[in-house]
Image 1 (cartoon, rainbow, N blue to C red):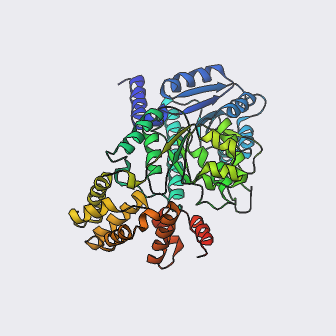
Image 2 (image 1 turned 120 degrees about the vertical axis):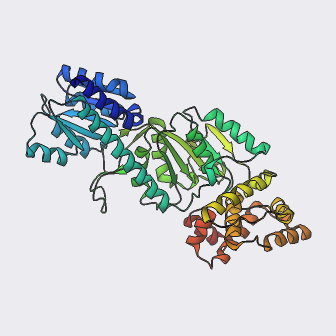
Image 3 (image 1 turned 180 degrees about the vertical axis):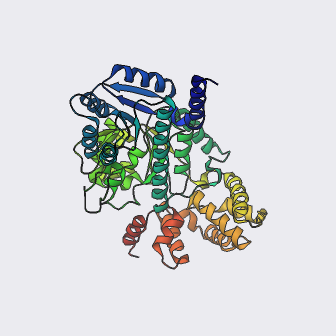
Length: 466
């Protein structure tokens, strides 16, 4: 086997392992030598989504301010500002992309300087093409894992999301078919989407379906519950921060919006976003740029936004607690999710799906959904919607039987005419208080059960004088 054949074989192995990440990457090559730039562009151009080149640190600064990059391949020795000085300056301004330093001098001082300046890897000139491909692939893979871990940790801290089995839009009712049709039409477009509906109707499931059916499906889906993040932390969580930007900022950190670069941001309970941040979010939506806390520079990123709320945003706009310009900027396409009680026999289909999935997950036998239970499921008004049904089926699998109180409570309300006289607010109040009673007043546990924030429960209990 010739050297060229061996080289081609190693490159093919790298492409096979990291091809999807290379294919979606945007790369900037910074080197004052035209020959090196041409070589790297020919090597990486066919393998990545976008590649740009800069012949100086000054031109590189302009490029990174104009558009986002996943990886920068940076020469150290250049006329004017050298690579290490440029990198240190960029890191101090809030530049988070991975940087691979190219150097002709493999001394310890250069290696230490590269790490201190913020490089994640360096290659020694001259190098083989597979060495550089491996370095780029490692950067992309490590960045992906770091972002996925950060998003997962964020999700675990939030009370809201409990995935439905399969995370799909189940059901055959006309109402859910209309939702599916709208999702199919809007998913391939870059348009912002506003999802409305009662708590528990599956807004995050719809958001994930939009992401899965879009051309961003291979990138991250980043769910953010605006009500679950403390007000003093939310700007840092969304936009990121520099080291020392505030007391506990021991290191620089990329924000959740930047984590979603190339993918989708799902902002749930958007009506609870603090008013001072609403103007900053509007700017982000218009410019697709964020300013990390402590930085003087805005950083470009590319993400699609899906919003969700169970609040009446138009009323909040009238009351002055939600910005009108932000509402109109978000509300390009609105999808209203129907409550479960308006979906007919979908409740039976969902119950059967949940029963099968929870039986498998818990390793316990399924509970029969006989005619009595089917009638009960059809008649109940489901104030907690799909989430309440999900919890009911899980409880039935654990206990080995369906509760009898649910059906008898419905019959009593129908007999007295109580159900017909109640408003939606009455139903919500009764349901939340019932869950609180069941959990001994534990508001944190109730928030997790209901899929809402502790702050929302506290606010409602104050309004009810509870």
